[in-house]
Image (tube, rainbow, N blue to C red; front, side):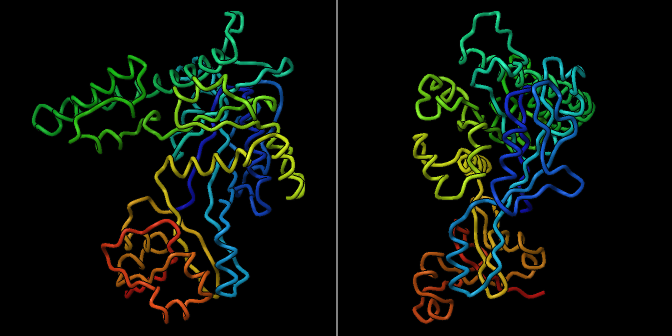
Length: 379
């Protein structure tokens, strides 16, 4: 599949653009997409980001460098994730408030949503959305902010579902299938009206695929990114109730993340040790995004290049071949396959073949994470 597209969303001033800029610093090869600014604007006022900033970030994968040594190539091509920094949402966006219409059109184009939630206090950074006069603590404010964004997305989906229902009502008079689908649409509408995300509405198993394919924002996979203060990085137990309620989730400190990548690698490790964390938050975010979308990585390794490819978990060999080129899938014959560790261990494709470690797999083979594959095809 092509590069994943993850939309970074949330209320204004929660750290979205700081996080985006840090993502671009993550890799020396990270770059902005053509026609886009390489850095998102960061400032203490709403709507700093109006048009979405798009950045392509390499997925860290230590296996690639090891494989490159085995096949004697200098060219390494990691898998990539495309992050889209979308304008901050405000209450009333579904009715066009703030940059509502632009926000909603941009968010429809992504594969998954990274919902950044403010879980830090800073008197110098304006908090949007939550009315702090209610006396809510930080956890309560974060929960309220999440609900504000989700409600706006559900309101937008209600507008969409009403149009779908209107379109299906006529067909339902003459088609049993259309009548059943209309019932599913009405059930999802009822769920949205009761503040249940579309993906969480229970429908008959026979119509699960139909429901998932509906063009609804709250159908999209989402991960909650809690932006905490530096002091809460090591001990964030006070947010445990949030992490349990809003899943999947990761926590990080966008300010710390933005500072750490200007340091040499060894100093980064020392800094992380001082903070009491094992990995940078952005690595956790990318890994969680892969898990969220049910993806794995298979590899190709030859003298020309070593490359990582994204494919859905459970994909058969021909589908994986199609990720590289549609001709590979159409003319698929078989796949020479070996686990990456075994290839590195023996030192070459030739040695692996001589030891009987290279397997010839057919059309029914389920590709596994870490498989190194050479596809045989005929067109």
